[in-house]
Amino acid sequence: MIKEVFTKPKSIYAILLLGIFTFLFLGIEYLYVNRISLTAGEEKTVLAQNYALGVSAIGFLLYPLFHRFLKKRAQIVGLFILALTAVVCIWGVQKHVSYLSTLLSGMALFLSLGLLGSAAHYLFFKLAEDRDHLACVVGISYALGIFLQFLNNNLINLETAEAIILSVFAIVTLALLLKAEKLFGPETTEAEKRPLPVKEDVRANRKKIAAGGFLALLVLLMACIFSTLDNAVTMHHAAGADIGQWPRLLLAVSGLAAGFLFDIRKRKYMAMMMYCVMLMSVICVVVLKLGGPFLIGLVVFYLSAGFFAVFFTTSFLDFACHMQTPALWAGMGRAMNNVSAALFANVSVALLVSDSNGMASIILALVLFVAVSIVISLYSAWLPAASGAPKDIPADLDPQEAFRILSNLFALTPREIDVFDKLVNSEESIQEIADGLYLSRRTCQRYISSIYEKAGVKSRMGLYQLYIEKQRRL
Image (cartoon, rainbow, N blue to C red; front, top):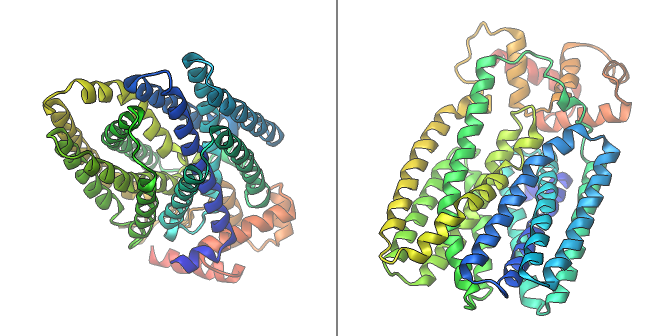
């Protein structure tokens, strides 16, 4: 599996892009919590952290509009402005003139990070075309980001130097985004504005949207449990306790383990594995509220957090390839996680502070567990419709419907579907295909190479033979 991942340039670039953004986001969050805790108590610090995460979720959800309605040049200018804003706000947080100034700088900073992060997830989606090892690529990216944060926190002791490093990595993230778009990102902005050439079955499309809603709700509910553990760790840290940097290594290890385990049998058991991890976290909350040692909560939090991050990132990246607006869905996992942190912040902090006997926290954790159990069942039931898997297809299937199913099976983008249609249903040359679709020959060739790679063939004849064979099996 490792060999297959690291022999593909696009996968390597995808790992670097998402890994460096992960480091940037977590590093800035760590700096922000440290600086704002200088003039705020434990509760206020946790609330400020979660509100900042909520603002970043707004950025994640705004990016699809940014991507859809701005022209290419305007998008590049926008990315430059966002990166510059991030650098300025990093220094606003680092200076910490007052609680209010740090809070406002943090809000602007996390809004910029949300937009940059959504762009990073979308470009990662376009780069990581090996869907069989998607969770593995996500896990390696996450582990890289965590390891960089571990090195940064252990080697850099001056906060000014930390701000310099984060500023540099904000620029590096910008450079990676622009380079990825230029080298590997097919120009799908216009194509994604158009409907699919094959008419979508209305019922199937509704099922996809319903599955996306269930997945978003599932992540939202799971994040409530994990944010409670996170808030407990943050309050412990804000109170002045030094928990050390070694738990970060547990995050990296759990992220790697999640990537390899989730990809077993093409992620067939991913949801069930995540369900077991969540059950362990619920048990941990109960143990902590009954007076168990804090170290248990710390270890369980860092082990489960890695699995959760890889789960929600992979789930939505996987789901995005079946939707017409992948820019919206690719980063939805991180957005839902951050929305949950913001919405649940007040309740979580109130429970951690005022729930002396722990019964309210235990009851809430159990209620959330039951809710997750119900939603994960609903999501699993709707998943086949979302995945577009050719299951129980009648033998006399309409050719257009068969073409649509195969396009989804190969995870083709809307523009790639146009090219795929020409390749298998016409005898036009590459130049004729390019002219008919108003593409340059180079761009058309790039789409064709991407289609070949996704279908696992090396020639047009091989693609046609595979197409006919798949149709017969349907």
